[in-house]
Length: 297
Ligand code: ADP
Ligand code: ASP
Ligand code: MG
Image (cartoon, rainbow, N blue to C red):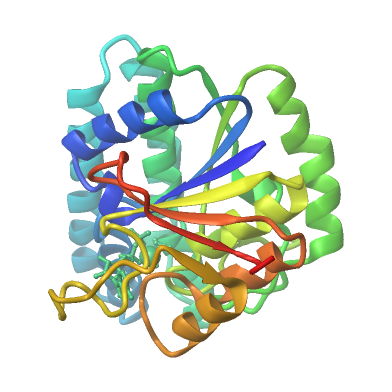
C-alpha cells in the first residue's frame, strides 16, 4: 500500500489534472490511497465566502460562492464526457449543502461556519478527479473522508480521534481496496461525532496523508509538489536553493517547524512512529529524484 498526496498547485487546472493522471498511471503500482487538496486557491476563496456570510453580507457570500461553483463546473465539463452527468449530480449535492447554509443567519461561532464552508473545496476537487480517473480507465473508488476521520470539535484546528479513525479505516476504507487498486479521498478535513465537518488547520492535507499512511501501515508516502523536492530554501525566493536529496525525520521536522512552507509540520510524526519513508517529488517532472525523508539507518 502506498499513499499519494496531490496539493492545490498540482491540480489547479485541467492541464495539471491530466498530468496527475499521467503520474498516477506511470508511477503507482498496487494499492494506492490518493489524498487530494482543494484546487489552486479555492480554500482562500471559500474563506471569503465564510467571512461574508458571517458578516451578514449574504448577497456577496452567494456571489462569491457562485464563482467557485462555476469554476468547478467548467473544469468538470471540460474534463468529463461520459462521467459528466453522474459527476454533476455529485457536485450539485455539495453545492446545495453550502447554498442552504448561506441562506440561514449565523447563530453559531465563526469557526464552525468556516469549517462547514471551507471543507467543500476538497469535496469538489476529489469528486471531479475521481470521475475523470474512472473515465480514463484509472479505476478508483471515491470516499468521503468525513466518514473515516473522526475529530473533536475544535473547529479550524480539529484533533483526530485516533482510536475511532483507526477502527473506521479498518472497517470502511480498507475493504474498498478489495474492489479497486486506487481509492481517492480528501485531505485537510474530518468530522465530529455529530457529523459536523471540521478542518485540521491550513495546509493540513500533508498531515491527512501521513495519518493514513500510519493507519494503513503504508510502505511509503509521496507528496507531489510543484518543486524539485525539499530545497535548502524556498526556491521562489532564493533561486540558488539546492535540492536536499535525503533528510532524516528529525531534519525534516526542524525545517518544517522553522517555517519552511513545504510540508505541514505535523506530517512527520505519524510517519516516524511507523518508520514509513516519505518522498517529496516534482509534479512537473516525475522523473526527477526528489527528496527522501527517512531514518538515517
Ligand atoms: P501543496 O501544493 O502540496 O500544498 P505547497 O504549496 O504547500 O504545496 O508547498 C510547495 C511550496 O513550498 C513550493 O511552491 C515552494 O514555493 C514552497 N517552499 C517553501 N520552502 C521550501 C523549501 N525549503 N523547499 C521547497 N519548496 C519550498
Ligand atoms: N486546501 C487546504 C489549504 O489550502 C489544505 C491543503 O491544501 O493542504 O489549506
Ligand atoms: Mg500545502
